[in-house]
Image (cartoon, rainbow, N blue to C red; front, side):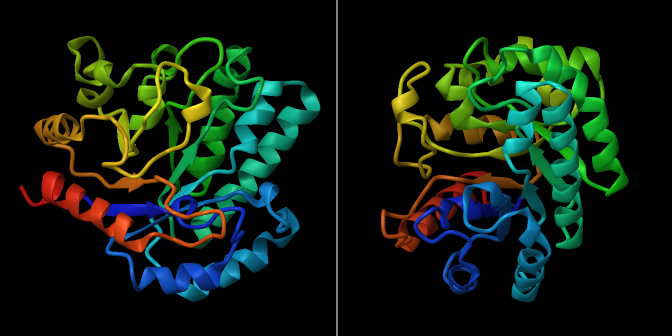
Length: 279
């Protein structure tokens, strides 16, 4: 049966940085079934040199964390290319894998491309995948490539390219990322049924969106029900495919001071539970 996970990125951001005290308190107030931990060491005062300490603090919380979101800088470095950046991407990726395994996660979400370079040299990213997969496999992690936004082409094109190159590749499908490129509707079309019929999609990020086509000013992930996406249709589709895996919500629910709207998040979890799990 599907579990509803809350991304730590929805409740912890720059105002509160890596506040594990906040995470511990919220874990008793939120009605989700667990968490997806997002690694963003490079963004805060905590750096990779503190990864072991962060891991220790997180393990002490004894939370259900079946999924870890790899640091986005890995995909950005791969997109930039060059021997030095690529080598650093692989080094940091291994640290991410060790972190994920040690806190008990089984899945690792990857932005295979990113940053300003994005998908401008997509062959860099396609070529890097086997090495990343080999590292993740060594740590017993299911590596999930996400349909992240692009600034040259579109994510569905790249998912097709990756599947052609690596027929056993696994993906994570994000509703907001798809909607940003006006590709959410493609998920329902016969042309793309291979995504779920062949078992490529192993996880979903269910986020709302209130912008238009490649509307960079409105890229933020919103809690379900606060944007314009048709989630009634989405969950009907998901149930029709027989999907029983977990889903993660990433919609940001904290203000500039770091105050988290727990009621908003719990309403979101209740809606998803009613429409996906209980019916």
